[in-house]
Length: 164
Image (cartoon, rainbow, N blue to C red; front, side, top):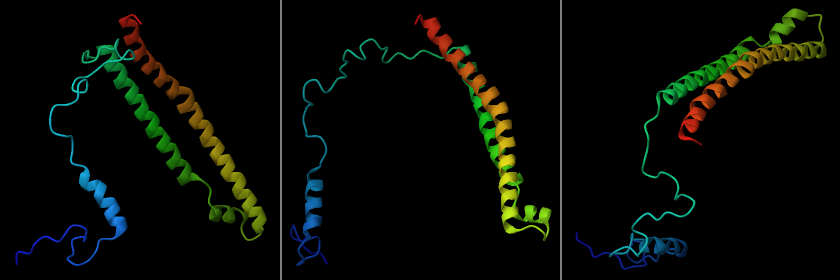
């Protein structure tokens, strides 16, 4: 059962030539074997700094202050509330929007199709407008500025303490 390996260029099947496209793809892949043996070329074994990063404190990480930790925690909490309210507004809009059957029930059998569709369009527009206005008041006018205030205070005060 021990057979000799197929000759190169046959695609693994003895007696069957390899397709040209497959051999064109396989040849470069066969040459990729990792880095050459031996020592690395000079200047590549160590980290070299250029002028752009020479002033940065690479390798030195300071512990966050209590103010930064509490600011991140509060900003995350406000961001979570913003996300939950956003989802709640979308779900509320979806479940409370007027449907065609409700509008048809309002008109009964006396309304034409054009009147029913115009009323549906007007009711949905008014419904969307009310929810949009409420969202703008609660989230965009109240919580988003609060989030930016907390994040700016937490991270801005850290920059002030450093002397920047």
